[in-house]
Length: 331
Image 1 (cartoon, rainbow, N blue to C red):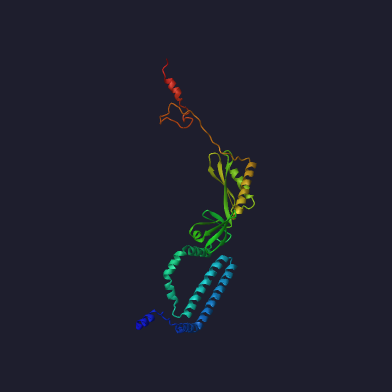
Image 2: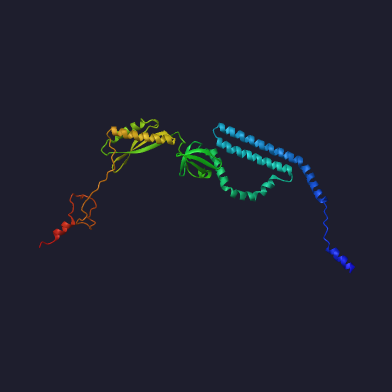
């Protein structure tokens, strides 16, 4: 019984935990030894990375300064950022190989192959707009302060950024257009050239002297301030309309929108006053209505029925009521 009690008491006693810190101390000591061995490499890697970062910042500043002298600040900002971060990435890869000699940049890039595809799909629009913005800045189809039309939007180009082009509409609104839309669609650059041609149609009476009217219009347009002398203004007979003869006036002026609008207003005013002074009629639209009896005796006879008036031979057919009364026998 005593033996059983001793056995039961020994089995019921809690297990003792052997706390041996020597393993943990040894592990920490190995970490410290490894850090000490890597410390020179780590210092060299940090210095190399810092050196590449400084070179990248310096290259960005030089590119921006060079392109600013050529009036291409936006291109300098984009290219400068691209060169800077490319150098920073190269410095990071070289620093990583110094700290971990077994690491090869080629293996790292290969390992990122699948993930880079996923990243490319995730940032497709951003990368597409960035590349389109870079191509726009390189090829320069338009510049800052140009007046362009993109789709339904028209205004002055304020800034070309890496993601979008910002234009200010003529009524003072800002429109942000993605660069990919601009690069893949037609863009009308209204200030690509210094002069732009405008035109306006004027109607004169059929009884007026056409040659004299054209001469009066040309003289009126030529005398307006802001109209270019070369190419010379023109007045061309353009259409024989129902109520007037159309004369198209054409002239050249500064391509800026405000100049085009104001000069157009002055031209219209000058033409009106000049034609009034020359007693040249500018008629209203005239409509002529022909009324005739639609109950003629030939109605229904497609070979003789008329839709106009008078008859071609000068003899109008009798009204149906008269034909019917003449055919009735007398009582």
